[in-house]
Image (cartoon, rainbow, N blue to C red):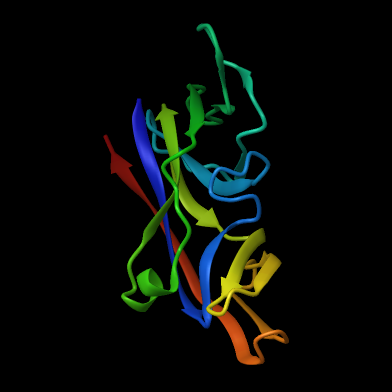
Length: 167
């Protein structure tokens, strides 16, 4: 099994602590990405959705996992297990230095996650503490005005993600 850490970054203007709505370990947050078969290299046509609150029996083993997927080309069955507790919010300081922060760890057997898709269900707070919920990053950016702090428009620009192999 290979563990992949989902790493994210974005340009945050007057915002900090960008993360899934329920926090980095939000059980209902849907992670969307394509899957690549380790056996033959086939890339899934559609994005796959994986979340902590969905579990299925692990084939030929005891226990459960978050995803079981069969490759359409070679027929190999692979699994993905989400491992909470390793993610943290993207802060404005991390964003300023254009660094990536870890969001979620995926333990994969026979599959490799590729091309994370940002969507709806994010939250952040302004640098003065006003909270913003239900941020939609599916268009590649987000902006809002902080009425409480009377700050200029709050922005999330150019969200990017990659998967890094970890021990």
